[in-house]
Length: 390
Ligand code: TRP
Image 1 (cartoon, helix red, strand yellow):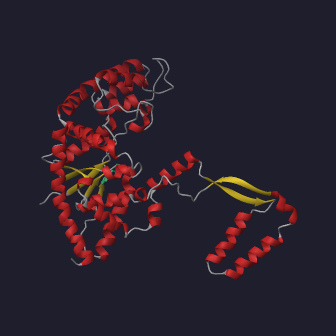
Image 2: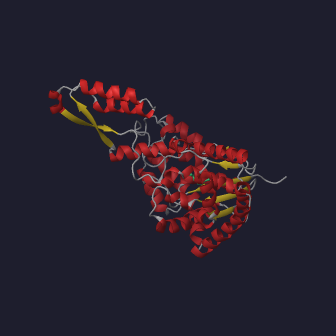
Image 3: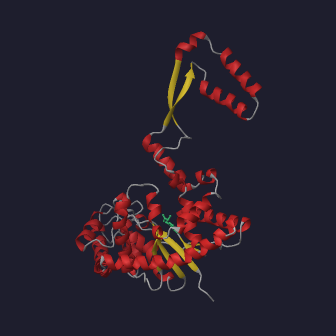
């Protein structure tokens, strides 16, 4: 029986860190032996929130793929390809964009988070108008709603009532109040960003992906992909599988500041960090703030150092956990052990990553993209046939 197709991808935002290794990459390595795997460098996705960084993307692509290869992703087993080298993604994205409503995209949690973040940062506010006790704006909005629901008589009556309650003396007390605008969409949000999950659906369905290994946070995107696949299949032709998520239990790796490990938080330990840097980062990492002295009992479950012991130092982790809780192991010694383990684990990965030349890696990407494109072309022929009949 043919192996199922897996499609997954990552935006080329920089070098890979131990969080990527524990959460995504070790899983990708395993899957390549069981499935037909396509691993995408999602460079167009990387432009959706920062359209002018295409220059740095090239560099990021090479660094990222060197790390992929170094951890054991094998281009003779899995297809490593670059999204923008397969322009069929753009065509399918355009087709799918017609099948998704704007309100549906506005409800997407990732979009809503970004929106909330921007509104807070930029203080997106508007002015609310008041006249003495009268909330003029609210009353006008009420009148407008009647107009919108085609009841102009009621709208006019509301306006008359508003005017009748407007005493001339309050006209001098017209005030404005700054309120958070719950409806405004900041100009930093592009059309392309709103369509992010539609592009992701095109990524998956262009290769008829059946299984998509993703983190919990990406589930809403996969749900949209499934809706699009069903919709297309029903209205045009049953071309697409409805893909299933593969939620592997991904260990939570915390950054050195206790937040989620991320390049943008500057709290990550990179696979390419040299030994001194690993040591420095581990040493300066936070631990349980309640554990001040060696003899204080610690809480490994909230400690970033312990989380890494659990993933990268599996054999010793139970002993370390117990000793920490019992107040028998101090943070200094615990960190020292982790630094040793990480240095040993990462050295071969770092050396291997450094051994690939840019040309070699570019060739891997070109070859993978060529293979991906063959599949993409076939799907697009079917899609065009189903939609336009030719
Ligand atoms: N949105 C994904 C992320 O940020 C990256 C991605 C792009 C992806 N296309 C994909 C993941 C297709 C799975 C399938 O992690």
